Length: 420
Image (cartoon, rainbow, N blue to C red; front, top):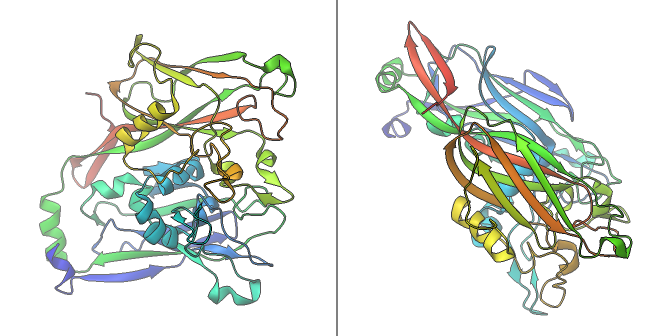
């Protein structure tokens, strides 16, 4: 846009109007500005710990964000709930080189691997950002998040005129619970630092008026959340009674009814996060990862009809292929979605990271009146503490539903679901 080079844009740094450490932060955007550009950035998100430890290797500092939403007065413009699991998927939903060189530094994650020149194994070679001691708040590593990635309404808008959006507010619900695995250990408390919001503003009313003429109907894909439970098997794999037993789960999701559903992502959370802990150390990507199971199958029934041929998705490579075809390249590694595969010979800490990036993705592209998911996995007799293929899992379902913004005249607008 030309106005970036002609002094029409000024950058502002906004402190939170309300900040309760580790609980919530609320930012209010000054209505005296002519307009805001939609490239909002959340900065200085993070904290300190004593002793110093790295942030979550998968989610980074965003493990602090339980939910986030953008409002105009009482009108919710866009929101993302259960944000940590979705943000974890986003972090690995990149080319390995991009994740290692760029995203991991911006978000303080450990995503992006290289080959260790000493032993030839796959490992995280690049520096991983860490927290610092409370005495060195100014030196602690924090993240910078482009909020377009979490609030797609922003990506669809050219600008946010304050004559139309008169009371813009960003609300963040935070989670610094010591058991939430924000750090790579679960026995050290993180002390959050005050985040800031970076915004670009348009000061020239003539430029804003010109942009307003092109402001009309806008559509975007809102990410909404629903979930179901995959129950624990009879013995949770502790006895031979679970060996080879197929567990079937048939559920109906109502959260996407009467909406057009495009992409649908499933993230499988292990219900007992302590199974990802060994002597206070988080194993691999920890609770925010998506657990792999043995011999999984999944079929989707939309409005009474299967959308996948035959038995649906039945293999590890097929499952990964659907994710890549639907969402794009992912920074995976050997054994990332294969249950029980010990890759220690080719990867540092291979046992820790096995089957921790087992996402399930599909494109639906239909108006939903009835959505059913038929999922199955096979049990194994296992003496390990973590037995994901027989343990209780929470399947987080993130669906992209079509929403629209439309001017209705007299300085008013309407936000609703696209119906056709």
